[in-house]
Image (tube, rainbow, N blue to C red; front, side, top):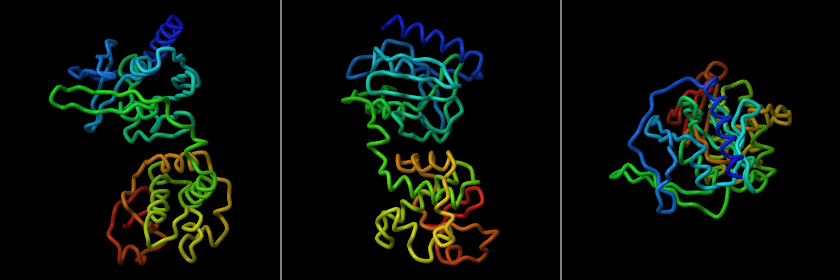
Length: 271
């Protein structure tokens, strides 16, 4: 098993040298797993106060028998109960069918693919503590990898969330799709609105697609991904409860009465 893992790592390195642009290396950060220092070299990079790490040494420290290969333009890692997909440039990693948001995107450092250490460890079922006085990332292993998407995503919730995202923002960038999903979920969590996604979507006189029937259209792939990202905590719209397209709805009630949050793509968001 160890030989297979080493061989996979070498193959990945050869592929990544050809596909990943170089970036400046960083040092001075140490890594501890369950109280013992991880001896394998870990490439790091800090992006907007987020520590990125080369994923393979962390995976192998937690799952020594994991196999890794380069296929379909991405790194694919597998072990008992674990299926992890990491694609350079993507804004998320996929772990057991779960979509975990990486706002700054998956990065490359020479022959290594870098992901935020907290996101990676969440996928692997581990927790992370940052010890600033010693520049140490302390990792505590868990009982196993992250639960599957089938367990985490309620079927009815995902069904309607992905459809309202598609109907309202199917032609918008991923951040805009996530923001629309945030509005729906923020309403679910607010005492001023229904407490289910279905109830929010079909609340009277709220969402035009529910009135016109376009909410029943099959969502595109990115709208489904955006819904899964939202359900796993991705947020680009803060606490927004409303959104409008200022070009088609100038002077809307929300723009006149609610605090402005952000403009993402064609939509303005309000809390």
